[in-house]
Length: 216
Length: 308
Image (cartoon, rainbow over all chains, first blue to last red; front, side, top):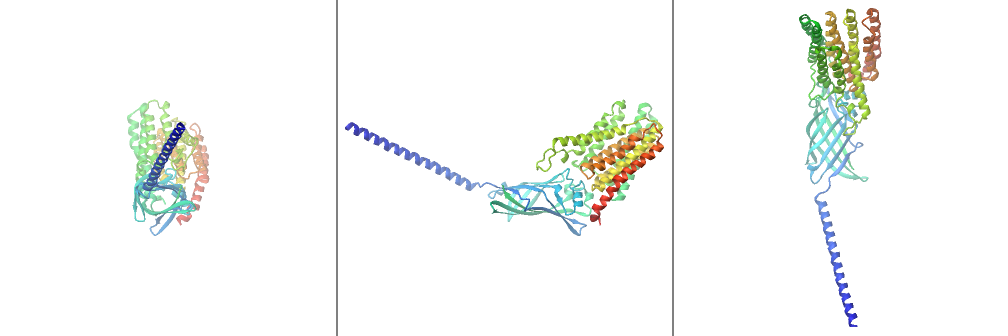
């Protein structure tokens, strides 16, 4: 009897010990999980991922206008444009903007003039098929971003600074969208366009970009 | 719109300068050296006349290749033409002329790559994915362009006999090929690329100047030099006009045919009078009816709204 009582007491002691160990183990696991969770939550809060967008051709436009005989404006647009934006709301300097315009897609509502513009006296689209902008520096300003970047047209790359106004993002039909607008003035002579071809069309062209980006 | 007076002045300046430089260097070269060198000097005189004629004509229009040489026309003017000039000088100065015409052929073939370099026609892939020709298409473009330039060199190389009859025959052939070159330049201009046609005018004028002096001074070697430069200029304008301008393959084909007909049909060992008339008429018909008039009509149809 005494021996069996002693064994029972030993079993109870072992059971109590193992229960307490299990409880400790579980509590430890909870602690680790909580720590991991905290780390994740805190990490997310301090470094939100940059928002990635692609250029929405349907809801965007890259148009331009140039003086004709210094009395009126000729308007045109580029129909084939591609681009992507990365917007870091926390640290705007990490944002980036890229735009690639297919020069061949120039459209001034007159086929003969478009054909003329594609030729080497103007855009020389067989030699320089694209017009490109690649941002190198982004700074947040009131109502948008000040973006400095390399603008390449007609084989000449120049650093330009544009004010991209907008940047408000909304969710529409499950797609996150952001919109920007800007206007820049370029001199064709700065991009080595044939000076003889400048003639009746003014040297300066105003480029108007209204673009919408869709989240990928 | 191009300034027609300026273009005409550039053409005339190139022609006069080339002719005068030829004349100024030719008699001294001809008198002072005899034998093989005596035959070489007139060619060098022709080349110096050509170079000065082209430069003066370009200066008249203010044509200066833009640096860096990123456009096809700039590369043609700043690399292609000096390369051909160098090849011609090397060939002239070498003692065994018959066996070393290869520098001309190599230079002519290289012109195709010089003109097309960096353009979409040589791009297999592009970063933006906007242009992507197949490797086979790129190789075919380069090979066919090189073959065209070599064929034109070969056409100009034909029949180098220096007899009196041949000189006249060669002069007529070269003159008709010059008409084809002028037509090509005008058609490229009418197609919308004024710069290329304008740059071709000093070339045409300089070739014409050397040719006239060659005929007047009875120097067959001058006519030969002019013949080669007309063919190379024609090849360059056709490649530029087709790959960068709006010169269509049928137009290019007709212009080349018009240049090739006299080069092939008029031979030195035949009486040329009757034949020249026939060939001249044929070339005129080919150039005016099938190329120039349709190009003018198309220009008026397309551009009338813009120019009115």
